Image (cartoon, rainbow, N blue to C red; front, side, top):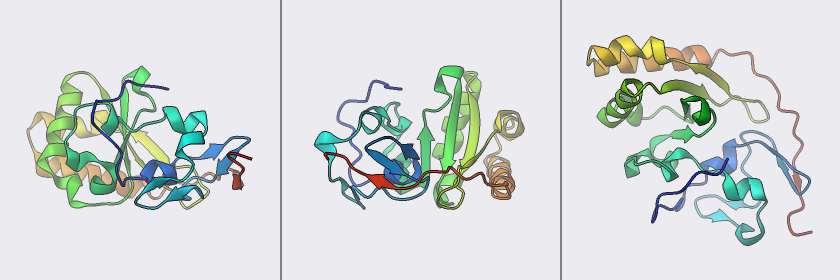
Length: 182
């Protein structure tokens, strides 16, 4: 999926997508959760000019929709994934628990999405080489959002993450292979 990017918004040192996205292409394969062998952590892609098409068109929604700089995945610990956006679902892929999860900004944005009829899913990574767990939590979060209860919202998010982390992980079956430019 290729979405129009916001002007003047760059990934900078964020390389979270280079870690979490599984790839199984002829020229590049990497298991879920493994930093791509071409990625320089905190800097970016060493083969940027010749990277595969998949890497050229996949962007987190921080690059696409108006969200503050605190939403950048390496700062927030959350990737706003585009998966499901065509069906009206936004996925918050929680890489790590951080203060961001209790921020007013997260509460306000999620409340706005729910008010607009957008479904919200939470997702957490599994071990390296395993797919993440994901669940749509719109109706679970709605009572706290409609009550204007940020503390209740955070409690529901944390309980959802706890439950997701107990998921029966499914292996992605990807074996690392690096041949870009060969």
